[in-house]
Amino acid sequence: MLNSYQRSGKDFDEWRWNLSSNGRFTTKKLQQIIEEKFLVEGRGGCETLRNNLIPKKVEIFIWRVLHKRLPTLVELDKRGVDLHSVRCPMCDNDVETIEHSLIFCNLAFEIWTRVYKWWGVGPYTNLSLAESFGGNTNATTTVIGSKIWQAVTWTCGYMVWKNRNNKIFRNKVWCSPIVVNEIQIISFDWISRRIKGIHLDWHTWLDNPSVYLCAK
Ligand SMILES: [Zn+2]
Image (cartoon, rainbow, N blue to C red; front, top):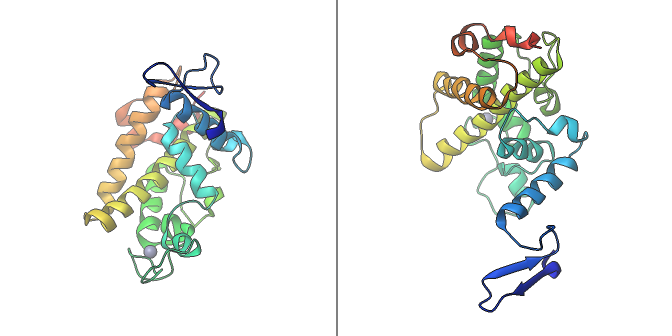
C-alpha cells in the first residue's frame, strides 16, 4: 500500500494517494478502509461479523477473536515472544488460549453465567467461541432480537478481555458483579443509541431484557 502514497504540495503538508476518490489521504479514510477489509473478509462471511448495534472497535475485537489474533499468552508464545509462563494469569488453572481467556477461565465463565441468567437464556455451558458470539439462542425469535442478543454477547467478550487487561497490566481488582454491571450499562448505551424503531427502556433492560429477544 505504501507504493500508492504520493507526497505533493509545496510544503509537503498534504499526502496524496489513489485509494480515495478525491485523492486526499486522511487517517480517517485509512481506518475506514482497514475496517471494511477486516470485517468483510472475516471467516463465516460478513453477516456473522457485522453488527451495527455496536461500535466498530468491538466488531474488530470479535474478528480478532475468531481469527486467533488476540494476544493471549499462548498466541504470543506461538509468535516467538519469550514468556516466563503461558499459564492463565487470572486463574493459573490452564494455559491461556483465547478460548480459555474468554470462555473457560473461571472468571470469564462466571461472567457468562451471570449474563445468561440476566437474559433468562441459561444455563451457560462453555460454548465454543463461534457459538458464544453467533447471536443464536433458542429464545430469539426475530432477526433484530438475535442481533440485540449478539451485541450483548460481543459486549460481554469485549469487557471480559478489557477487565483481564486491567487486572494484569493495571493491577485493578476483578469483581464479577461490577463487570456484569458494566456490561449492562455499556451494552444498553451502545445498542439504544444505534437501534432504529425500537425504544429500549433501561429498567426493562435490567430486569426483563428477554422481551427484546422477540423485538420486531
Ligand atoms: Zn484462567
